[in-house]
Amino acid sequence: MEYKNLSLLEKADLVSKLLEQDYPTVETPLIHKNEFELLIATILSPQTKDETTNQVTPTLFNKYPTAKKLSKANVEDVENIIRLVNYYRNKAKHVVATANMLLEKFNGKVPHTMDELIQLPGVGRKVANVVINEWFVKKGLAEPLGFVIDTHVLRVSKRLGLTQNTTPEKVEKDLMALFPKKDWDKISLRLIFHGREWSQAKNPKYLEHTNSEWREIYRNLSA
Image (cartoon, helix red, strand yellow):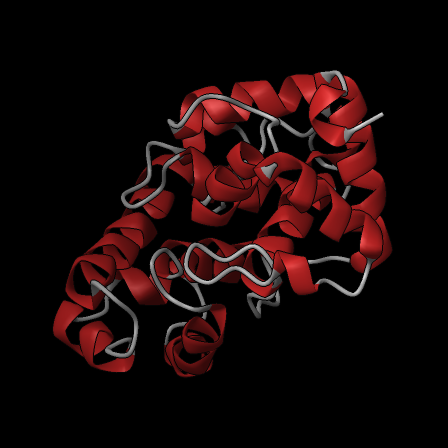
């Protein structure tokens, strides 16, 4: 049966299988040693390449390794350290304010619930889901609460016919309904990697994919 004629669940099963073949082992590319570093790196990462974020975080964490030390940082100093990331001025304010809130409301610890995390400056559902899935779930300290939605996931899921929605909140609900909860973190990362490597916004390379099944899917969708 042609891909576009499959049910949503059949499409999701096929996409999941092919993504796992391409990316059998996945983890966040953001360099971190603990949940605090992951939180700060993820706040810095939107609209910035992971490689760029990873260029600035070692210096930042060497100087400010804890929430207590970062809370006392001069925002201008943080700006200078993270200058390579997009929107560095706002992000510098966010990470210092987040460090302060961690101390004031959470005893200096990174919380692991959605409601608590999204109270932190610069933290929305995407950042919160990354922290929860990539640290607390993998450590067995929490259950997955959502699906990480970024521009790649939005584009690829719509392109593959897994959703007709365009807002992150609605796309997240659609994908959560299609994929097993235990796989949410892996599927979202695989969709991101697929979007970066093969299904770009401009001049996508999916018809050059090394796997003929992917090429057939995209040909079928564009027919």
